Image (cartoon, rainbow, N blue to C red; front, side, top):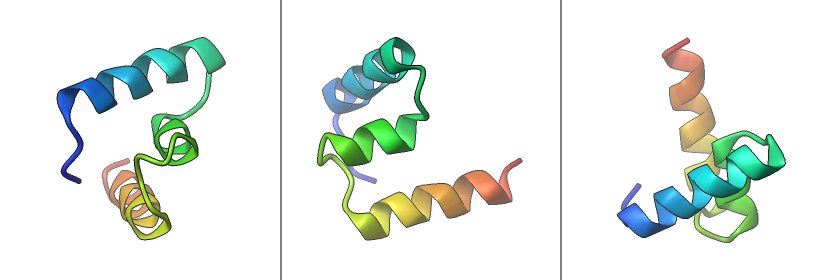
Length: 48
């Protein structure tokens, strides 16, 4: 997705604090656009 380590770490910390899924947190912070968000959800679905 091209996210920096800092962006991912921020997302992981915030996801833990909010008890929210990482993709939702990344999207809410504007780190993923809607197409990237859908790509992450599709990837998760395929790897369950």
